[in-house]
Image (cartoon, rainbow, N blue to C red; front, top):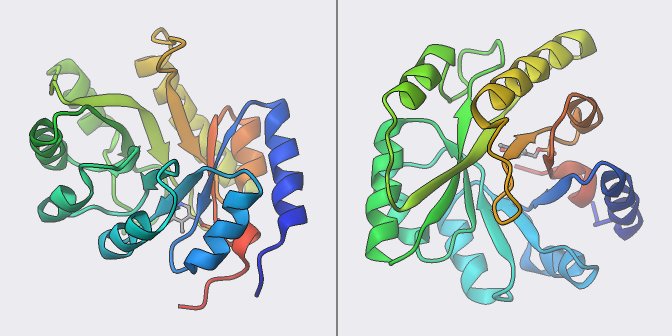
Length: 221
Ligand SMILES: *Cc1c(COP(=O)(O)O)cnc(C)c1O
């Protein structure tokens, strides 16, 4: 399936009203498809696989902001640390420690989001509420990482009420930990919402959505 620029423009317009940032999830998509969105003005792209991200970063324009949105293994942080814009799926303190180490080596500060486990499914990665509480109460201040906010994925479910409740839970945690820290240079980020549930997510207070299949067509994998 091909990319639909009109869908892209419609979504952009829809997000403008709520000042929500669009991350175009381009995993498994060709560089050619990415360039079509780039030419239409898109700069934030999300990838899930380190090798694929490295190749795309090497080939594509340098003003693209690359978001790593998948599960990142600690031993692979070094491959993306020099250029990644936002690591969204930080799901353990161990990983954070490694990101800090690699960021220091590259003499930069890497922006990160802590991934929170909000869905019912057991397989989803992320901090649960008590781990989050532990993280913030022990005040782990790694100098070369900046925790910009939270990211989460709702259950894959037709039950809108359930999805809504999960987003509500994440928004509450976001307000609790990031509510008072708004600044112009580095506004706090609440990344929630994908192709199937981004409208619900925005209504519940998301300010960053990660949309793949709606923009690029269904992934064949
Ligand atoms: C693949 C993926 C998305 C995009 O999913 P779509 O349903 O295609 O919009 C968003 N977030 C994460 C973490 C993903 O892995």
